Picture 1 (cartoon, helix red, strand yellow):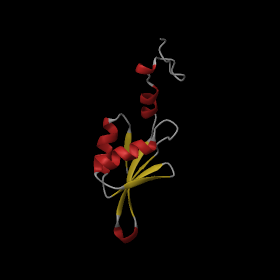
Picture 2: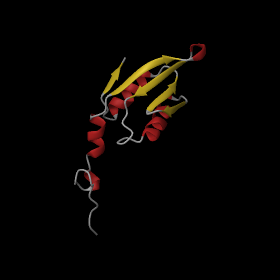
Picture 3: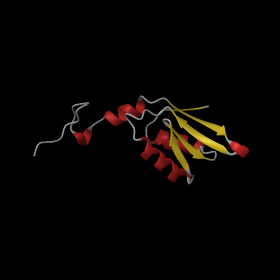
Picture 4: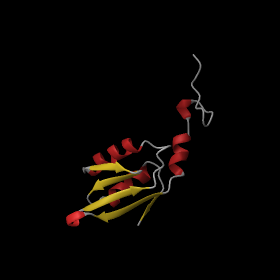
Length: 100
């Protein structure tokens, strides 16, 4: 049975590096926003949806932070102030992160 080859990088799918390269090329910003009644919301912005499954990433972040959240217009919103947790998690996954 022939091995499946990634159409983008040409490597076998088991050792495909496309997702790693996509992560390194992201310019992700994490910042805090204040909503109605003084509620804090952590915003994760700059994720390229064509390379990364933003819904899956949002689900992982919500579980990691034990908070509710959503995806809107290409960014992730988490209820509460979770900048440090999100930064640590994304850096662990190989994303370059900028806070501000």
